[in-house]
Image (cartoon, rainbow over all chains, first blue to last red):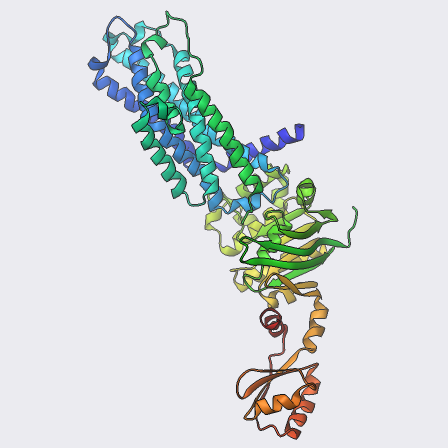
Length: 268
Length: 307
């Protein structure tokens, strides 16, 4: 058991090392920050249309942040990030090398998956920090909107982002599998982007949205009552939603299918 | 260390991707310990498929593969792979990283100290360029880096698939010298190539594969002896078909065209006797040309003409 853990952690460090000099780290950092800056500017320009007085302005602000994140950025980011990471192995002809090493195939498969998911988590964490800072900056320069008079509820906002992360694991596992499966990156990227466009169209329709993994992150935003969530006077009542459960099921099922397929595959 | 007479033993190996196309057809190999085994075959003969099967990357439909006396199956996969270093066709390099970084990644996977990196870099003569991005390496340098990665765990068996492919003569000589050096250290080297001239300069054992079958296997000297017995002469005579009938039984022969035929002799010394016999038989000879006298011809013969 200890050996297996040591092997897995060594594989993870090897995966992290491979990110050196790749654009993916910067894409995640800059992507997380830029999206927060976009919301910040948009909010600053259109602030009168958003803010209702005598209640927390943070709820409106976070709603815009979350909407932008889930409706425009998150799924395309997952599609591109997983392609970038996994295609590096295809481009290096690395599978034949990796699978001829004295390592369990599960270490190779799941360490890379963990690093891909960690990058998604990192981008979301950066977005969390940057959007919080954005809110405070607005509060400082436009005190009349009372950002600084209300609690920013940073951990509630983090919790919302965490739930969004859970809802995106299904897409992450699907895209990971597609990228490992197809050497030609056009295929996984096309499936991912078509899935995203379709998700935007059907997210309002629960009968479809709850069974279509690309919808899950948007579905969280669709169903959320921001005024209630960010009203610190109310106790926090955010359980795991149907979309999140489905996302976890998709994640588990397709991780296992993907790994099994790798395990029995002939490495050409 | 327990010793096995054969480091690699392959018996009746069969592999196909589709039912129509059989890539390996009852292939057999026996690689003695501490040998340099040259695995020869034309492109598409099944060399890479054999190597990938030996490494457990492909699952053969039938046959048995053993390494170090252990059968290649999932229970033995790890103990086998711990003793093997492999370089399969184009080296698997992360081209955005330096040679050193590529070796460092391999060290992490294999749980080796980074001090090993300097040792293998010295062995393949890449110390000076180790910090350069591997994308900028020449083909020869990439190949040597691939070899360095294969050598990192100090394996007992080195499996190299066409390591000199695409290299210039200097690069080929460099790789050859490295392999000779490793052989002197007692390592078993299994090396595939489609160039006999390359194998005969270095190998102690040879296996020749054609259409997924082993057509020759033995020491390099055995191949030399076989060559002596396979001395071919091309004959051009206006009445060649008539002569072919008369030759029947005395000399093995093959009709190549209306006036051309090929006759096989055990050795070069039998040629004057043959010419004498042909004249006696009434052959109107225009040309008698012994075939180029080297292993290359035999190799082509073994891999193209054998039924």
